[in-house]
Amino acid sequence: MKTIRGTLIIGLSMSVLITSCASNPASIGDTFVSPSMYNSYDCEQIATEMMRYTAEVANLEGQQMKLYSSDQMKGWVGSLLLWPLLIFIKGDGAIASQLKTAKGTLKALQQKITELKCK
View (cartoon, rainbow, N blue to C red):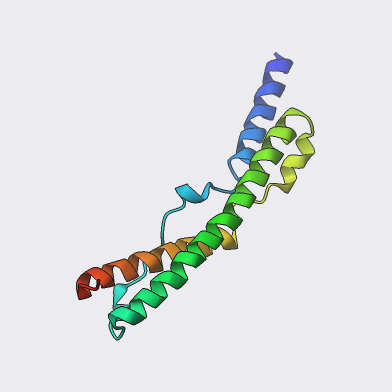
């Protein structure tokens, strides 16, 4: 009975720690950014911003993927061999937040391009 209870407690503790790992960048959504921010922009300015935010999203996705991969590895190694390693799993932070905002800005710019009927 004590073994089952101990196993259950350890399993629940590990699942709580593992679920706090960094998210896969593909699963991170966007934060709403109002397209009206770009009302004074012309098509050329919007295209420039689109290129800038496309590069920023790619950069942030790369950084988030590194965190995700690192946390996944720590989770597997930690749960199998070195459970104290689970303490070092960081989870989502500033990069994920910046990625959400950048994705939202890119979406707002895309809406603006559609509204202005830019090529």
